Image (cartoon, rainbow, N blue to C red):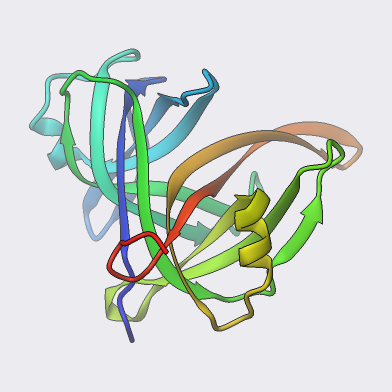
Length: 205
């Protein structure tokens, strides 16, 4: 199985202190909600997961602390029935507290695993939604929702299941409402916003 490109760099500030996410093979992993500003001024709050050992190398982290993250975008299916079915997070490989402008850079490649959906928004903008399967090592894969706009949407909409896709973009959060048992709930979806298409070596097509 071919291992796909999956690299992300984030720089922002913690929206809340770290909290326990889960324990895997005796290793504690903590959730770090990271706020990253876009150039437009909008703000994405992204879920970063890091081991307690990684955090032990840093000073105690509180809300508002600067944080830079190098890692991969990971997904898993939430079968609890609470919240979104697909959970998208950033698995941290390296952490630091260097200061600087907010950044959100993602390089990703994989295989289209569902037919792309080309549609028009109520404001007349053309967008394309798709799911990209990015293989990890050891036979696992992450299934990442992606969205393209304008001319990129048309290019993506012409692709088919099984086609290879490589891109540069960013991971973003989007708040929406959903009615559950007669009650309206506010939820957050995470998706990859495609900025440009590249080849497997990272060069823009």
